[in-house]
Image 1 (cartoon, helix red, strand yellow):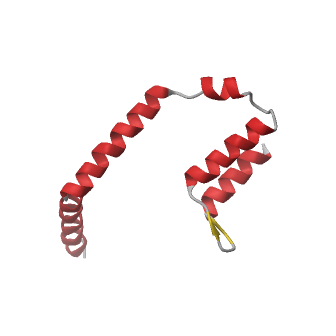
Image 2 (tube, rainbow, N blue to C red; image 1 turned 45 degrees about the vertical axis):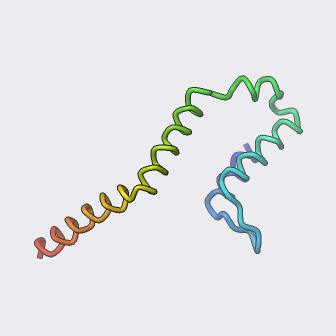
Length: 92
């Protein structure tokens, strides 16, 4: 329970003094801590990995990066914020 609380706090604040933490660093450190303290076995940790989710996330990251590099995300955000500005001025 304490490990979960520490993970949530570190993810929320992301900085302790001059140290800056990335989410993957916090999660990896917590996983290693749980394995080293034998709260979960290495075998159980490996078996708990859902490779379908990993493949899905890798695919989403590839698609997202391709959309960002092509400029499509900037174009869509421009259209959304342009419309939001128009709607905001009409509501008064």
